[in-house]
Length: 345
Image (tube, helix red, strand yellow):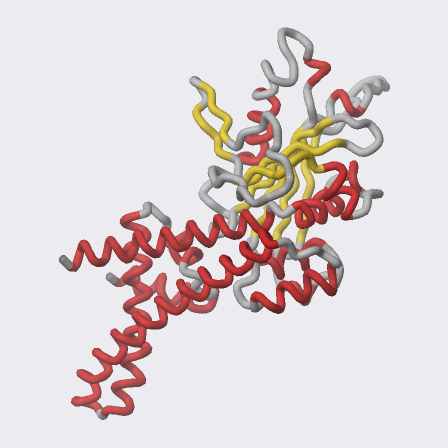
């Protein structure tokens, strides 16, 4: 019975984290949020206004993972673009947010995806940049039979893979890095049209403390949006006053979902810690004094409850120790303590 209860709680915790992750992606798929990302990171849109990008250049409504677009949206569904890319030999890739956009001045369509690792460490057991390049490659190869047929490679569209990392390592915080194909003459002097080889670009956006970056930049905007510490109403105020962003019903609902799910996960953890802390505190209090026992019991109870949750995520979900602590939002200063305690068990 205890095993079933523990597993059920682990599944509930994982489900809540997945729901929170989905809410984050819905927030990031808002056209005005995407417009800020595009203007800040993509050369094609540097000279455009946020309004132009959102209303003129993004085609249809961006598609979010396997979650359908809300039926009350007035924008048309994006045409001919799915979030699942499946081949017999290479397997299936599911993109978090995927959409088409027109390139200013040319009217050409370019393909963009944004992948959000909202609950994973930047270091996930392999170089994240290699996964991003693989996604770009898949988006290019998937154009055969849709954008071009036979040997008409001149019709290949440019692709972007943009990765937003809310919890990167210290040395990557508050940074935006771009990786793309460049022409280099080893011998001789040859010059091909840039549009013929500059076909894929990877961009990593690593967030940090929103108070340590420029006040009206993309790093502050995304850090505020994905923050667990900024209250819902404060987020909406900042979006309106600092970034002149319209708060649609869909965006407001997604922000509310993020806030509620974050509070729910946090409150359940606190409740479990208080309950186990009181129980152990009473037992130790009888031997060493009620006041000291309750204090130590609460602290130990919270620690044991957290260790149980870490164990459960590692066993039931296959998480690494670091990934489990990241999912539970354990602070950097407490991670060493839990790592040491787990090593002794």
